[in-house]
Image (cartoon, rainbow, N blue to C red; front, side, top):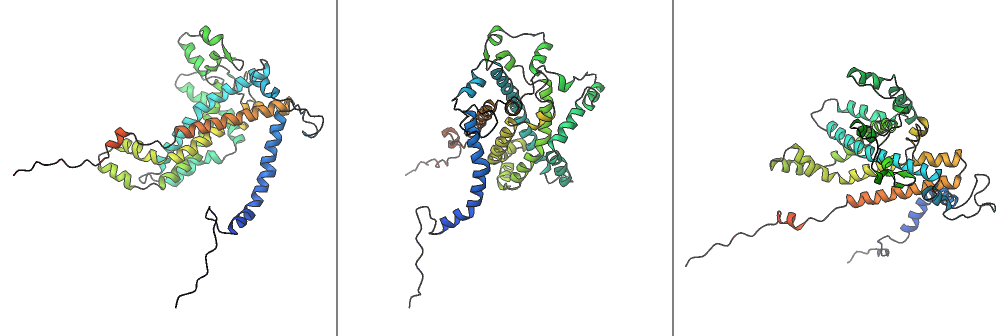
Length: 369
């Protein structure tokens, strides 16, 4: 006798059986509705505002609101007025902020993760909590603390005075760090090629001024408050790595740095991409520290695109320009994320390196008769 068996249900080309797709849509429908109502629809409304002359009163879809095309985008990029210069200054400030914060917080978080992941370290739980504690503290509270520490008579300047350094008035000093370093060597102004040409209303000499002293304090605060969170991501990745490859490298004579650089770090590439992406997004969207601390001062040297978007829309009532700034910032973040993904992609092994791992056939031995 042959056992009776029920015929299997037909599956589509994707391998999902009949009815499973419908059940999946039913279970995900509440989340899709929530995302659509509170995320997709507001984003589309903001996109329309960026192409309109909405004044912030009434509905942006009323008959009184007109479509103005790219006027709001042109005003902040090619308008030649104050709006363009403010946007250029904000981009310059934020670019230096990203350039410094992302590498520093990534390197520090990876160093802390490797440090507390070592089995020989005693009290690892205490150090993990201590390093992560600034990340769970309110940003407003940290900013207020930073304003106190970096004031003229604050703790930072007191420590600097012990080694004979007269600390600056941090949050009231608008000069750029790079210009200050060049000034120490007698360079007070740049060449005509940099001072006469400009981009977004800001001369290239000012683009190369570096972060202001005030923005430098925000850079240190960002590294201090975010490294703990990214440390946890690296710790989770390190604990999932197999020790076989590391032991094999140790047997082959690789030292600690070679094992980390050639064995451990390549295996952390997915986590490294996540950390860099989250850091990049967070740095380009910096707002609450600026709003609580300096509100763009001194001399607009801590102005960021996120704060400029808020200021243009809610303070100056230029809602179209505020929305346009937000979407330009969105494009910048997407572009940098794609570039970062391209740089960290998996590359094929070169032929020269592949030859090192090829099994060479044994040399033929001559035969004698």
